[in-house]
Image (cartoon, rainbow, N blue to C red; front, side, top):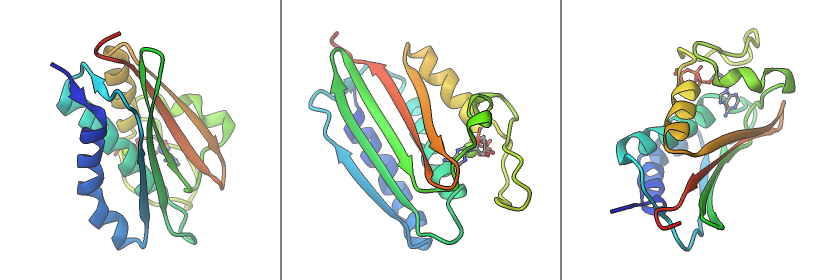
Length: 155
Ligand code: ATP
Ligand code: MG
């Protein structure tokens, strides 16, 4: 049996809504994958989505309200998820390193938030263990987008 990715993501969004509203933020959900069925470990994939949303909250811009956009769609045989924020963004030269264990971007006092630098290493490992891929598009000062592609249950 599979897991409905749209339902799983809705669940994580629900747990985040209060936290995001505390920062005057907003979550937009476009869960439009018509076939959302993936064969995954529900707990781990829930943790993956949670980690990415947690980062969006942690690395928001101080001067701007957080807008978090979560989208699902299908490509042939695949379920795609994107989690996009309007946060501080990541410099091109650091993009590769953010998936490394214990790596955190050095930005002086720009984001004085705690963390171990393990979240994205975990995310990448779990996605790869499910034969999926993850990539980032990010621009410093504009925002970041994480795109996950997972095989569908029936492909
Ligand atoms: P942990 O997740 O272990 O609590 P962390 O958030 O620092 O700590 P990762 O989630 O692995 O670690 O992220 C690594 C680094 O990548 C972060 O320290 C931050 O510098 C950068 N980063 C991650 N997500 C974002 C984002 N959405 N916007 C801007 N920078 C980000
Ligand atoms: Mg993190």
